[in-house]
Image (cartoon, rainbow, N blue to C red):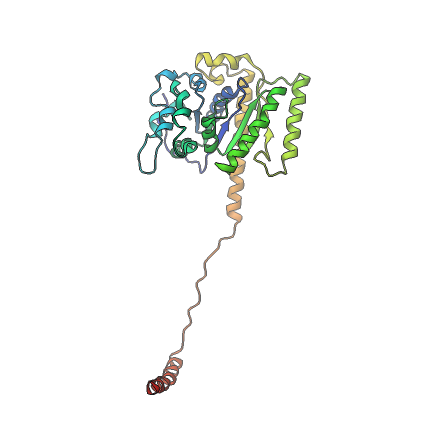
Length: 331
C-alpha cells in the first residue's frame, strides 16, 4: 500500500466531473484509466466514486462491501468549519502511487433520499473535497448516469465537465440535455462551471457514421465558441479512445489498463490523453504566472506632510490672539 498522502507543491487543483446521463458510454472506464494515467506521469490524482453502482471502486480492486467509512458516510456527515463531521482522510484510500480513491459502497443508493431535506445538500461534496485539494492536483469525479442530487453535487464541486461519449446518433442527442443541466447549475449553484471537452470512447474512426457524428460535434462546438455559454471553448479531446477488448477485461481483475495490458491501444490512448491534460494545465499555469509578472504593482503613496516654518507659526499665533480677545469682549 502506498504511503499516506501529504500536502502537495501545486498551487491550484483541476477538478473535473465526468458525466453522461446515458449509461454504457465508457464514463467509468475513462474516469479510472484517466486518473491512473495522470498518476503515472507524477501528478497527485484523486478519483471520486460518486456513482451508487460503485464500479470505479471495483475497477480499482476494492470491494465496495468492505468500505467503511465511505463517500456515502462523508456526504451524510461532511466536515464543517466548526470541526464537526467526518474527516475525509478517514475514507481516503491510497491505492496506487500518486493515486487516491474516495470509494463508494452499496449504501450510496440511499443517499439522494436521505439528503432530500438537508440544507445546502448540493454543496456537500464541495465541502468534502476542500481539505483534499491541498494534497491532489487533479480530482476526477465519476458521476452517476443520471441527473439527480449526486450528479448535482459533482457539478457543484467541479470547475469543469468532460463528457465521455460514443460517436452514435442517440448519444449525440443526449448531450444537448446534459449541456442544459450544466447551464442551470452554472446559473444557480456554480457560476465558474465550464464544459471543457468531449472524450470519444470505444471509437471506430473507420465507420462513416462515426465520422459524421464527430463532424457534427466539432461544428456545434465551433459555432458556440463566441457565445456566452458554459461550453464555449470546449473541444473534442485528442486522441479518441479506440475500441479495445482489454479495456473491458481489466475491471474484472481489479486493475487499470496500464497494469493489465500496458502495451494495448487503450493504454496508449489513455496515456496520451492524460499527458495532453497535463500539458494543457501546465501551459495555463504558465500564462497565469506571466499575467502576475506583467501586472503593475500598485504602491500606495502617502500624502505629503506639510511642514510649516517656525516663524510662520509664530506670526499666525500673533494674528489669532487679538481676534480671540475681540470675540470674548463681544460675548
